[in-house]
Amino acid sequence: MLVSLDAKFTNYVSPSLISIALVGDDGCEFYAESSDYPLDECSAFVKGEILPLLGRVDGALSNPSQLASSLHFWFSELSEPASLIFNSSCSWKLLVDALLCDGLKGLPPMLEGQQFISSVLEIDPVFYRAKMAAYTPSRPLFHALADARALLAGYQAWFASCEDCS
Image 1 (cartoon, one colour):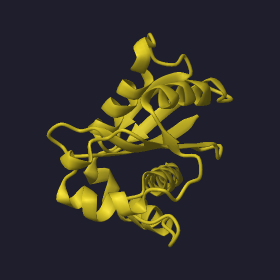
Image 2 (cartoon, helix red, strand yellow):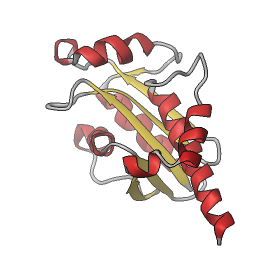
Image 3 (cartoon, helix red, strand yellow):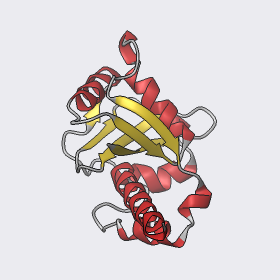
């Protein structure tokens, strides 16, 4: 199963998780917002673009322990092993950190692999059009869940276009 990952974080120098989303190609989704990121460490961009988008998903607020438990449960409920795609290595690091919170040992068994999606692929016209078409007024650009959905849509369109060429 292909699962798209997106995480929003305070800054690039010392990132702390703000929100995280996982979207499977079977329609399953996970979204959570951190209850304990350091507001004073948020970059100007994060304060202006990311923080105003929080609070749109009921029940998303989680402390680190709740987040770790919820993530492990979500992965355990998948119908098949997940291969993650993401366009920020920081998203991957923050997911791993969240999964290993509270002394939890190891990554979930259903997490099979990961693949970084480069900006070169994201500017492919097929990828880019599908990605941008996935955004809606209620799930705009820079919301972690919207970005995870859009990344998956772009990748799927691009992959399908590659299969059509062979």
